[in-house]
Length: 126
Image 1 (cartoon, rainbow, N blue to C red):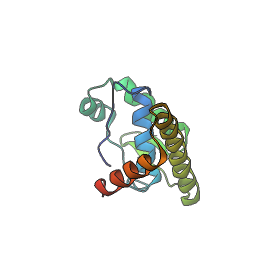
Image 2: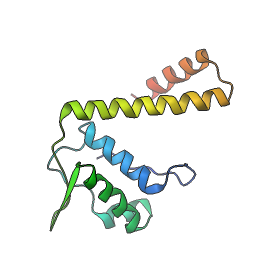
Image 3: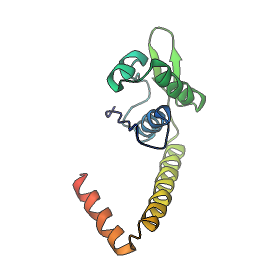
Image 4: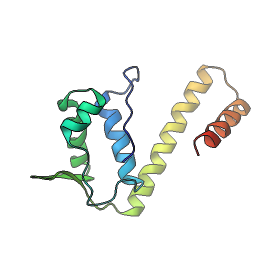
C-alpha cells in the first residue's frame, strides 16, 4: 500500500483522510483482497497519531464492507466488485473536481489556467 499522507491543516479530520486514502488503495487494486492493512499501532506510529484515530478509520472501512477484522491477523481486505470499485473511484474524482472548481473560482483562476495546471500536474505525477 502506498504511504498514507495526512495534513493537519486540511479541513477533513485525520481519521477521514486515512479512511479515504486506504479506501482508494483498496478500490484501485493497490491493496488486493486477502492482504492485511498495516497494524493499528504501526500506522498510528508512522503517522504520529493516536491509535484511536486509526481504529476509527479502519472500523469505518469495516462498516463499508471493504475490510474485516480477523482475530490474530488484523484488518484484511475483502473482495470488491470491480463495477462498484470503478463507480466509487469515479464518484471520488467528480467530488474532487467539484471542490477544485469551487476553489478555482474563489481564486479567480480561469479555465485555461486550470487546464494548464492540470496538464502540468498530470505530467509531473507519472
